[in-house]
Length: 355
Ligand SMILES: Nc1nc2c(ncn2[C@@H]2O[C@H](COP(=O)(O)OP(=O)(O)OP(=O)(O)O)[C@@H](O)[C@H]2O)c(=O)[nH]1
Ligand SMILES: [Mg+2]
Image (cartoon, rainbow, N blue to C red):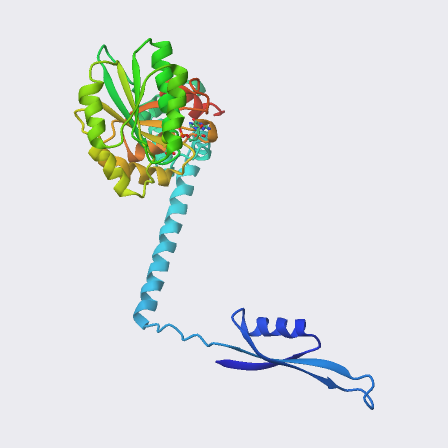
């Protein structure tokens, strides 16, 4: 241990000196006071003496090799960054003003840089000068990237559709919105099933909606029960059966695996993976990866109202090409849901563009 003595007029000053010199890990070993100066015992000053120490950290053995490797890695990163900046500058400098405006706008919308540049290059090739032509070409390119939405289409046959996704993304609310839509707007016979039996409140939440819409609800406590409901009890009795599931933390492979067991493909026609648009793109990617073992058929995007940047409509395409089915934009059942219509998405994405 390194031990040192500090003298000051007050204890506070002494401690301050200790910390400044030995750092926050220092410990006080002893304190004492003594008088100094003065005349015949008058006018003397009381001083504080503090003995403090700190454990000396053993330096990590640094080998010549590891130091050199670290330096090489740092240099590589630096060169890569410089190259990226240089490329970026070169790319941006060469752009006509309108295209630069579009690039900056998409950048503000949070569109991944490499996608953004890809889109601008495609636009560049068209050599369009008129603003209208440029915008309509941009909207065509974006539509191509995003792809046509695919709502639940009953096509005269009955369907079983299940909804999966991370905790709290809006599965139950969305199931209620869709149930209300198919009953009230399309006059279909709809039934609900929930496999979310972990929380009492979860069953009650869906029960409340089913009471309001006046449709039956069944609770499946196990995969065997769900199988019986779908293959025997409810078979052929409804135009549409909607299955709500318990939210799985996307890190919980066990929970997601359990759903796989429940969804025997021949009993469930469509699985919609629900993603919330208020989640970071990188996390969206991880969620998509984790839920891919359930082989979802469509992506359903929720909480559009909780974001002001719409780049994820494009970014998600980078990880997953499944069609979007619906978009939800609020908590109101049944109003806040729309089919993932391409014109609607483009309106959101390009709504504020002014080039
Ligand atoms: N702002 C906004 N909130 C929404 C939307 N959809 C659902 N919510 C809210 O998000 C919260 C969670 O919704 P739930 O439907 O319970 O989510 P869940 O995925 O079923 O949750 P778990 O079953 O716990 O995994 C509720 O407060 C909903 O009202 C939406 O489009 N926008
Ligand atoms: Mg729920």
